[in-house]
Image (tube, rainbow, N blue to C red; front, top):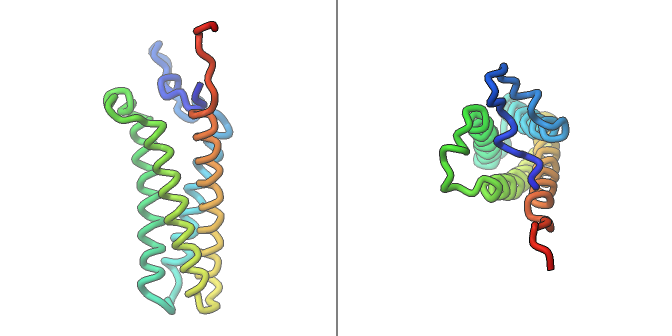
Length: 158
């Protein structure tokens, strides 16, 4: 059984829509931590006055913004129940791929950013928050994959 039961997020009995109340505390906390860490990493790099290596930090900005945008898209899809209308996509697999690609690209961007920071403290802080976001995405990946692809009980008796 999956932790994220997409159909249980929205009441069907006509009651008020409380999206935040429907999420588990761990899931909401982890998603918000990812967003905050990515946003802080982006803002640290974006607000730096001088970049020692322009392509490296532009890559860092693009990667962090892209994954913030992807989090927003997934949130809006859950909010408007689009996952129920688009049944041809395997959503647990999509989530797994999102976190896998996100973890790898943000890790690469953070390594390159920390190497090319040139001792500028704002860029070092951005890289550190990039590493934190990488860790949080890896934890989300691990918990999501563990729950959705772990051993499941069937009704068949042997």
